[in-house]
Image (tube, rainbow, N blue to C red; front, side, top):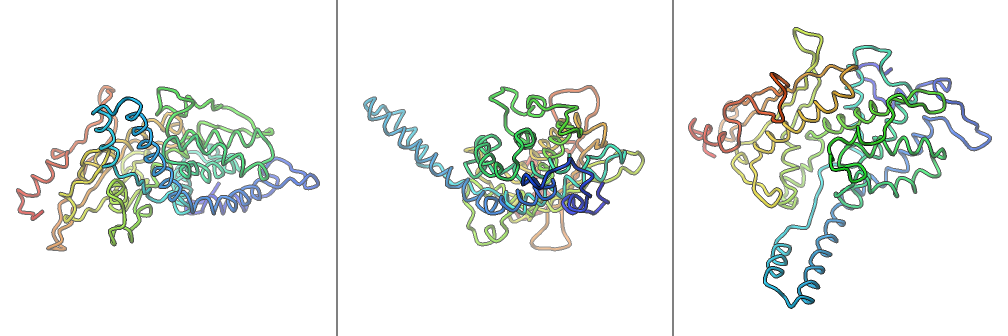
Length: 387
């Protein structure tokens, strides 16, 4: 398996043909590494269009809703509540400007998945060359559906994937495996009400086989899902767009969040053989009191960080069901530093840990006294911060 700092792609390309199922060049077949190279090459121009596609799809959906509301009002004699619905739609910002979902994000997910695998406890438990091939293909594909719009993007890429892969991955079983691993990274599966539990509901085989090779589908799906969760740092933010004020209000908080997250790293615990996830945020005090648009309401960036770290803890607990026997990540440690624009030496540091303790419950709480954005603002003002 890859060395500590070796990229998964580099490792895959260096494997001997004997590590993979046989292939017949006389029938136009290629080795798994070459198939992956072809798929990656064909997906590159699509990755570059993901954010643009999501924006266009969002605009057309907004336009469709307005036309539908007008037609409904005309047919029903323009009742007042339809006028109110139309006004709400017209006031809504239709632009969804995603943070990075293209080639840069794909590379970050590959790096994070590699970091997870490098921390497996037992070398023999690490994914096989065939499993790495399937996993890398799924990573390349997982966000392509955004080109059709954000809603249900994890399923909407099916037609795109089939069109792209039919000339590259000619074996239907292999295509289905890759598709199923990619589609359960978020959202829901086949309209199932328990939308977050996609891996369990995704018809994945725990001890599957592909051409005589073992394939642990839930393991690969969990690696992609958790690696995607960890790949949300500053590299996803449009820093130039933030600086020049080009990002729409409805999307601004997502880019500010990514900009603030400087470190996402798996660390060894000091006194046990387990691991923890370290997250480090830096927030400029010039924006700490700013209200950002989100879900038709307002939210402070600090509250966004609190909520996103709680979500990450939920993802950690969920993915550990499938990764826990290989990879002991037992908690998330968070450090948020609020930096003063008046004094570079002055800062306020918030730290807390998210982990399971006591009897299980459905709630996750932050063990920091000022655990809402409003409380943080009061604390800063009481300490003399001009915000």
